[in-house]
Image (cartoon, rainbow, N blue to C red; front, side, top):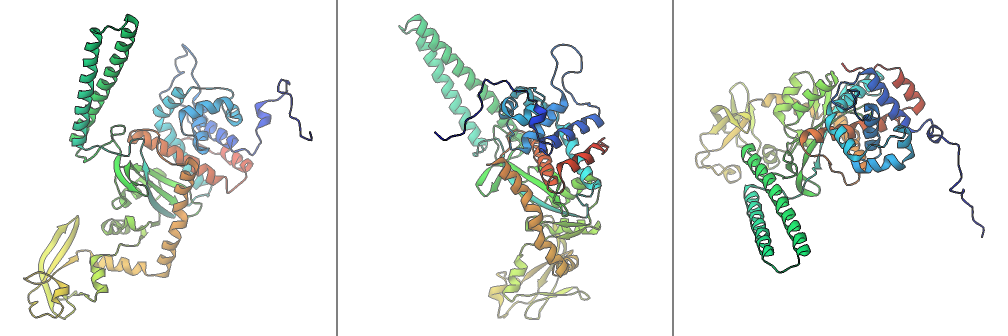
Length: 483
């Protein structure tokens, strides 16, 4: 037959890991980055191998490189990483033949959240110093990401029902256990059945203790629903419906589209995230952006005005309000600043009725019409028997100025380019991870996992701007010491 023949498998070859990895392979960049970071920051985290006694531990630089490589290549499971260290040529080179088990990998990731965070923070500083990224414009976006938990969350009644079911199951197994003692089964069969029943009873009792703890957390936290597997997760709504998850926030700079800020939150939407995102981004990078872009989900006008007062220009489109819907129905009210009155579409004046009336966190000045009798459009305008009430935001003049700014060509251009800047980082991460969900539980651990995703994305993005050899030179000559 006319086929190519492979090499004899028993043939002895003179080859090294070094010769099997090309010089421009991304794993070399990851290796150098982790080694420089550890070398410039004498390792202070809680980890094994410091006492000089007992079995030697795996070096932190290898474990950190393993995690970054895993998330860079879409391998976040510690069990999968364990397998890859035995068969993946790139990991055989990176780990220098070391093969930690999945529990060691998981333990290192759990105990070194600060180390991962410092690496990400220092890498962002590197991007800014080398002018791959810019601090001028930040674009924020949020994405609902599923937690490592069941889609169905429990309320307090659900917890009680489950506890009742467990009690019933335990009682049934105890009854079977008593019945087994008086049965005529052979001694060997009876012992096996008793062992299995005791194991089932112990399992249900452990689950019951955990569920009772979840119930106490639910009652003390004030939440309506909770996930037993991840009590920090909240009920969020995404494209796949409602599920237990987190609202992951990112801030992407406009020059190189690098993620300069990332935070896992338990807020179900983005409406109150703007100020917090900006403050955290400034804290992370040490730089105050000149402009901020976001979608309508962040259109909290109070927070927008607060940010603008700090000298940061916002370009965030506003939601269509009931007032604007009225305008479409030709129910336009005007305001006379000198007389401090509002004028209805029929020319009647509405006088100040209440000042600084607070509703849903916003201060309004309330104006009321004294005479709506006989008005031809009263049926469309109000159902009140005493006259139309009109609420004017106490900051309405500033709001009008902001709306005027949004109508400029520059603002329209910024708003139009927002999607092209901020959407693809989440898209790249989700594409890389497949059906994306966090694998760790608890907000702090989930944040560590999100930090690893972000680091992996930024490395991938950086490799689009320069050859690996050039990047290696810059990494080698950079001071990676944390501030």
